Length: 351
Image 1: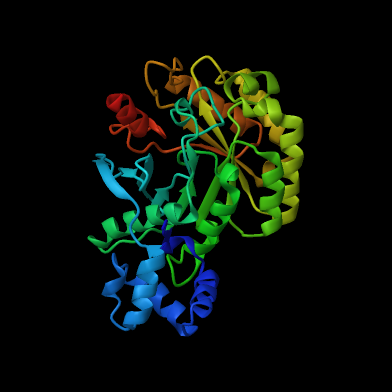
Image 2: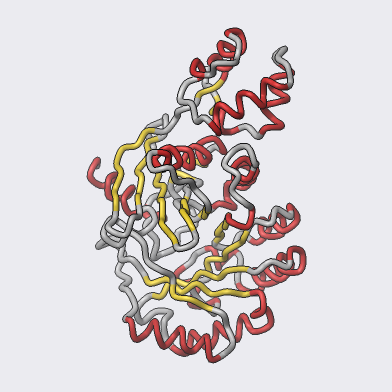
């Protein structure tokens, strides 16, 4: 029997399951407390749960389905975990120390089908989606690591390997679980989901009214250049993407972040900065541009990092045109910083 991860259930689903299996409603709250507050690693550790219920849980659910294969610790405090799933696949999860708290970047898929030409994640095609339980368990692994120092995860970014909106239902369940006040209690406004621009799902996400932050991986201000570096733009070009963005803004009235990786002599000229400012001018009161210095991936990807001078010129041009922007603080540059880089390196070694 293929057991489900206990982390994959919302509190409502766990309550319903308990009732369907002849257990009292309050058992769900007790189990939820043991799993998330006391962070047990085996069901038999639950002291106030009767033997019948424990045996029922053990027969149907698992707690631990991920194993840490590699843990890299950066000089800046960033920690990158290479985790092995039960089926042997590898994923990455990253803990970053920010001035506003401790942020975890989670993975939603094994590999990625979006195929952005600059990205290490896209070097390996999607094998499968992660379950909601596997995504939640990434947070649990990091929280147990932080328990040793009495710290807690305060922010989550869904920007790891994969396209979150390509695993939409599991993503939404994950968001509801980590947001629950008796699970990790991570506020919706402390959670950011990034998408490369799957237009129908942007509309659907807006309609959920989750108050979770949305980030768009833009990386180019015109269709020709964006289609060259991001294949998804061929399916959802800017004239389809921006009506969806406008719908999201009207529906939620929440600020939206645009991620822009700066690639040397590709998309980092003043001309592209001016085009980006023009593209965002009508929504600039709710737009925020995150300029990202590129982390070179490997010899198979030929892009280079933009110079400091180019980054500063790009930043200054946006600012002069009234666009809110920042150059993102770098994390883990000494430990395979790029998303998917550690995983792809280990898979190349294995082959």
